[in-house]
Length: 164
Image (cartoon, rainbow, N blue to C red; front, side):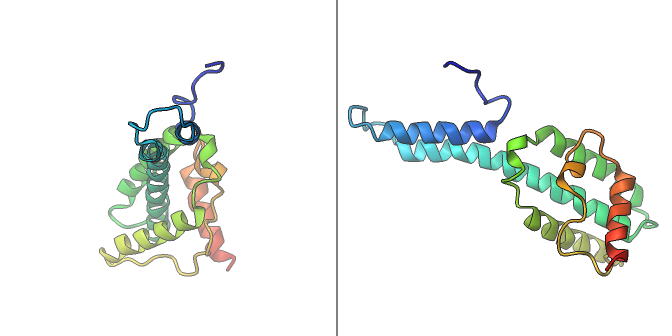
């Protein structure tokens, strides 16, 4: 190889490149048919997809806990939600790779977070803030940063509701 492997730096792009290379090899008639090229390529691609889904799940949890805290700041679980926000956000940031930015389904992440927050709040007799926007009011670059500011994120959510 004439360049360092992307495996440690960007596993999503690495998986896509490796799967494409395997598919190209599968087209060569001189290679053995003993390898199930297409399924091997698919399994490698699934590695990248699983990392992507892990980050999406962490972002959903981060946003859901932000929504719960913004909606019910005086709830007994509010301090716990704040700890969870920090934990999920830090883990998402540590798992995130720049190539994921365009691959993450931000609308699905936001809608899933709203649904999860609503269910979590309803279980304790609280309600979600009315009038939440259709799209996430927190920019991806503000959410996926080493210096994530929970209070700023909570203000952004509150402001997005107040503007509607």
